[in-house]
Length: 376
Image 1 (spheres, one colour):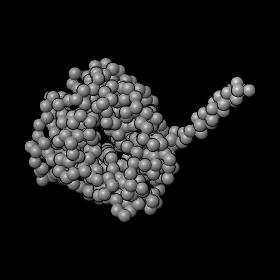
Image 2: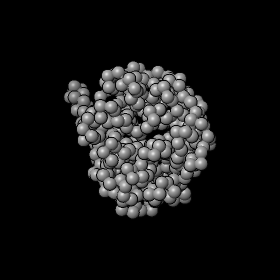
Image 3: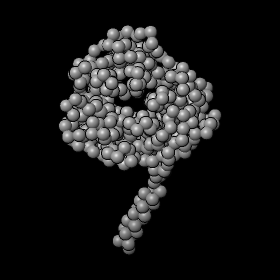
């Protein structure tokens, strides 16, 4: 009798475990809702109590596109959706929400950490992460593209899931013509700072390798990848050490050295690094080790060994998460946010390499260009 009760108990446990697994919500794997036809008032500035983590791209003919994510309830939560705006006059004026990516309204699925990018074929990609909660290892990187980004109302492809993880920093085009995405599983797995590569112009993507971020130093990774002149790959990542972490790969990203603190001081926040048309490296970072302030642009002519110049873009507190692009005429465009729950502002700075080298704005420099501000 006691034995029968024991087996019934085991069967009951197994049954409820199977039900739990069967009922586990997999809705974050479903394509989200895409709103392109005059998104409603629920997606406009007056309804946003949170917005930030922006990205910027420029179409072949100069149309600017900016994306970030927002929420009606004031934080990084199940209500998060991605919003895009555009400018046809070089950032003098900006549209209202021109595109919204919202998985399921009030949740539980959230869309967050977007990135926008002009590929070598002239298409603009919008990437974003999609998940339930904040578990990076089960999140997914989604994307869609447009082949007519010069239009104010372009046609977008159907969204598709590219890989596991989260990507919030610009891709890198390698000398091999491969496209590399910096994808992270955040703090839950070894070799969390991944490189995900496409050899067929974005049709398919696969994980090539990953860098091990020591667990005690991890802070969401948010890494970027630069190809150096010796063909090695240099990875910089966010950390909680007061410095950016660095790692290198000499086999096109298959294996990486264990990340260690670089000599670049920085608080725990996103940065932006980019190879300019001149061949120099541009680094936009906080010029300190603690606060999210003093957002500054620097240059390196020796592959990141030393940095010079220093154009102060915004000295205020709570400015963060730079991203950007360089135009064909050499102009550099940087986007960033300010206080995601209070001011809820998205800004842009436009400057030249010469401005960074001299550390002084010129007559054509534009700083603190307001792209968008949420209001109640």
